Amino acid sequence: MSADDPIRMNVLLRGASALVTAAWSLSAAAVDAPAAPASSAPPPAACAAPGADRAVDTACAVALARHAEGEAKAGRNDAALAAFARADQFAPNDLRFLMARANLSLKITNQMTPAGIDAAAKAAPDDIGVAMLHAELSLAKKDYAAGVADLDRVLARRPDATMAWEMRGTANVAKPDFDAARGDIDHALKLEPRSTAALRLRGIVRNNAGDHAGALADYQAAHALAPRADDPFAIGSTQFLLRQYGDAAATMARRAPPAPDGTYWTLWRYLALARLTGVERASGALGPGTAPGQAVAWPVPVIDFLHGTLDAQALLDFAKKSQDVHDLSQVCEAHFYMAEDALLRQRGDAIGLFRQAVKECPPNFHEYEGAVAELRAAGVPSTAPGPTVAAAAASAASAP
Image 1 (cartoon, rainbow, N blue to C red):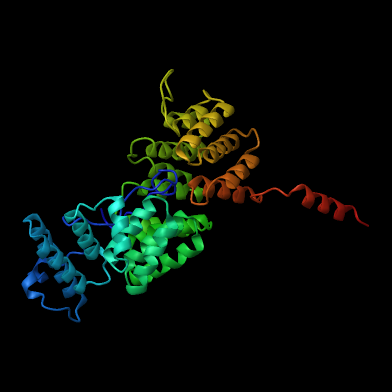
Image 2 (cartoon, rainbow, N blue to C red):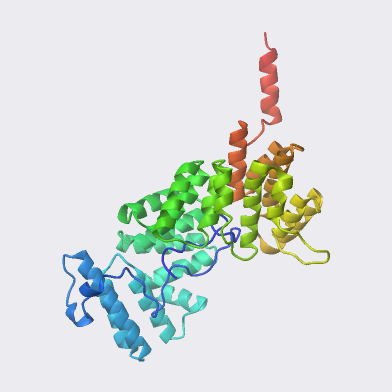
């Protein structure tokens, strides 16, 4: 996997707020640092010491890493570890070489496990490669404070390491702490303006702030540089937030991943089509719904609700059960989709439901962004005035 795979969250490829493991590190057999043209890539023996030409140094680092791979495959682990260490000397701001070295070192000692990484991080707190591995493990366990602490130590020693800024930005988005995340992301983009990981992270932060046009530009720029399978959802749902319904429906018509992630594509594409053609004509995009007796996982019941074969209370009951099992926020999602249905059918309290979704949803959920955008478009605040405020206003209005 590459350093451009931000930890998956509800905002990008729908795993709700759950994180997936290890998207940043490289195994000893998977170093994919920027490759130099074949004609300029020197053999490892020619790389005596780093020079002033960054391109040449990068080529040397890649050549040394490839050499390390070969040594590891041949069972010459000491030589492989030394080659990875030399690669780091030629590209100290690219932490993948040290991470690959740490990865191999832990594998040699049968410590490439969560417990082994924890033990190695405690035993060698100044080992940057191990600290990066421990940071990604902490993020996978949702221990963001520990991950940020690891990354703080790394950045104290390698302040120009783009990947560490990207990973800390990911941790702060996941917390969520968008102010801290923005600083990390801006720093990463200052170091590497073409960082697709940082561009996608900035898209999340901009969407959360209501800058949907800026978010769309970031997602599209990242997609142009390095397309990813989940880009159509990030781009299409942001087009929806911008009320570009035709573009959103067309973007999300591209092949979706399997359920449950792909079900969210279906839901948001339906919402876009329903704005264009009405709910009856758009309903075909939802698919057939659940067959009698069929066991389903969230968010499939939302499709049944939108078809009218499941009522609101049953949807909320299903969401609550799913939330209790998975420790996610399905109830807030249910309120958002109920609000969209009420808005489309012009019945019920859509505004109240959108406000409920804003109140319940984590800020890094796309349903939160959607609810905020809908309330903004309706020209109403996200929260209704409380009794005290309303009483004060009435009193002021009646005063002579």
